[in-house]
Length: 135
Image 1: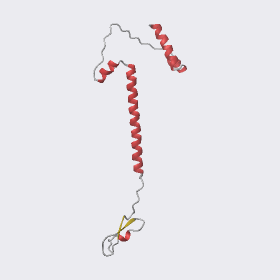
Image 2: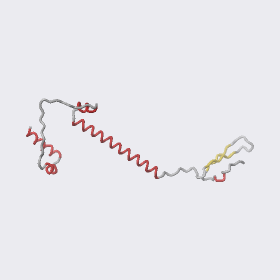
Image 3: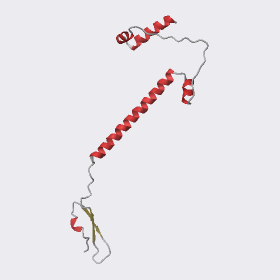
Image 4: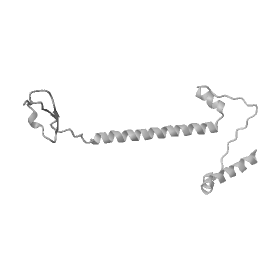
């Protein structure tokens, strides 16, 4: 029988034995392999948990950023003419000439107090009526 110098540290709990039938003088060999600490998988360390959690948080934040960017883009497409947006995206400047233009600046005294008491639809209706009278 042959064995290695470290064979004494192997037990049934930290090794695996395989019987091999070979054509030799006694026709039976037992091959035993093992590891001193056993073959058990190490537990997940706290560092692994932190790394996975951080990557999930980063991914979630990146997803929210992409969604926010898309919402801003959709809002821009609703507010501005498509030709102006396309010019700006190409790095151009939007300059348009109009024959007659009126720019009107206004300040409604007490607007904040009024807006606190009304729904958004009521505010829009009030402003629409007000500025229609100016037209």
